[in-house]
Structure formats: C-alpha cells, structure tokens
Image: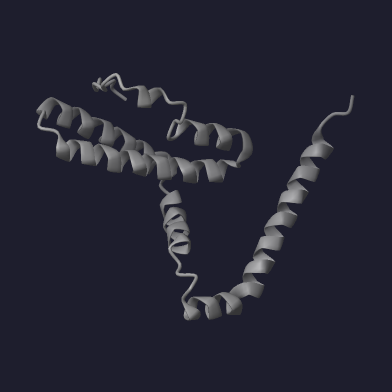
Length: 142
C-alpha cells in the first residue's frame, strides 16, 4: 500500500491510552482462533471504510480525497482477497445482535430452537477439547 500522509492536529486525546483498534487486535492475536481474528479484521476494515468515506465527503481538498480513495481501494482489495468469506459471518452476527429480545415472537422462536442451538454449542466445546488434547499428545515430554 502506498503511504499517504494525513495531517492530524496535535490533540492530547489521540494519546489518551485508549486506542480504538490496537488493543482488540492484541487481545485476539493472543486469545482467539484464526477464524475469529479474520472476522474481527473484516469488521475493523469495514469501520475504516466508513470512517474514510465520511472524511472523504467532508473534505474540500482534492488531494486528500484522492489519498483517501487510494487507501480505501487498497483496504478493499485486501479485504476481498483475504477476508471475503467472513462477510456472511459478519452479516449473521449483526442479525443476531439486532434481535429484539423483548419481542414475544422472538422469545418463542428462541425457545423452539434452544435444543438445536444448545447441542451445536456443546459439540463445539467437545471439538475444542479434542484439539487441545491432541496438541498436548503431540508435544515431546522432557
């Protein structure tokens, strides 16, 4: 990706110790599986796209618009090439998070589907245990 230089004012709030993406990435790198990391990266790249689109619409400077467009194109290429299959997963996660838990129909459907969901969750946990046991068995003993 070509390096672009954007001016940010010297604002103490930029250095307040509360990054918006870095800590999440660090946590996931250490604690999450590859699929989860890819999903979060897709969400972060989408957030950058929304931020840069807004910046592009708000600026009058054509060179800044061009630079933002270039950055967005590169981010989108990266996302399409490496993270394209995560868009459906992101969409499904958004749909689940948007459910209206107070809606009686949603509540009844949730009860109706509980056994299936519980079985799938239990199966995931069981598969995770097997992988951990297999990794332990592969380690050489000292």
